[in-house]
Image 1 (spheres, helix red, strand yellow):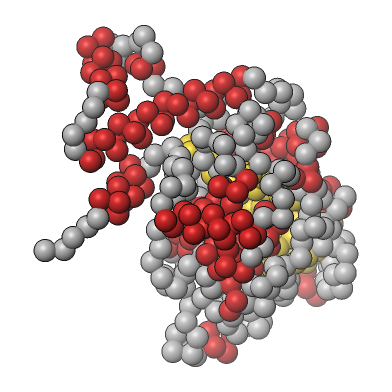
Image 2 (tube, rainbow, N blue to C red):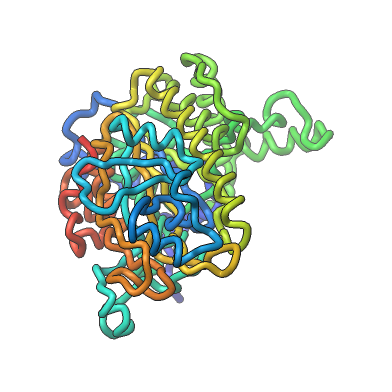
Length: 463
């Protein structure tokens, strides 16, 4: 009969239950703490990462467009029913870029300004990769170079973007593993997880020991029945719930459930008190879902001292990017909401005088095919993302910006981009800035990193 240790069962139960936070206490966590100690240059500074995940697969060909000459003509000919008029594109002039002039989608006025002021940069043609791959190798099939499983699938590519491990099954994400490495060094006295999600449950923040704390745009979720309230109108039900959390329990799972419940209550009270007693966020945010999430991120950043946190990792999300139809109208609406929300967040972080300590990046499971299907576009592979913050060396393009045409060296068919930059290279750049500079720590966070050109030292977009 197979033997499963109580510790292993406990960890599995805690992760499946989706608890709010967990403190380092296992041998694995102790080992990671040693790695983190070697990585940490100082524990007295503050840094935050904000992941903005765009679910559905944002259309990259209309996000950043060649804006003149034959390159624009190629773009127009490739998708005549979807192409943006040249006069409506928002010009950017990245430092060091010598290719065809480029313009952003018309809805990205604030991003244009942030790029121009040096606060934001473009990450070109980034995506999930198991190894670097050329078009010739792609055409040679998987026997030539392995590629991520189930390419062009929403669920698979969302998972692989978030785990950073497209060559294997994984139950942790690269931001969660970053939390494993850094939490006990930078947040030793905090009872709240280093990973906080305002965008719901996600894989990218799942660690071996780090479990994301989920909060709504309105604040921490309180269990009213644990105060003086009723449970669904029943005083007896509320009393029974309180007993479940306080009475001694004989079974391992019962004890663990009780611990998790108690921790949930304690964490809610800690977070609510920290928010109530921290400087207010005064910037006006739009009344949209993504803006509300980012407003709460700004509030949690303002509460960092009351939470005893020198490192914070946030996840927010916006859906609606699966543009099989109505691409022109729907992308304009989604990007408009995103642009306004990012601008408000940038304004607030600058107002808090902490912009150099907060780095925000976008992500999406894939880009989309250049070839149109009438009023929309189909699933792709590589795509373009943005990164911004006071530490970003902005007004630049990092990676290789691809030709927007068919049958190029990056064409996987129908104008789907073969990525030339891996998620690993993005992750290494962020991890090193965040404080995980030791090679063992980086290997824990992104085990495949050394397969890629920038896997050792990162892409260089942060100072």
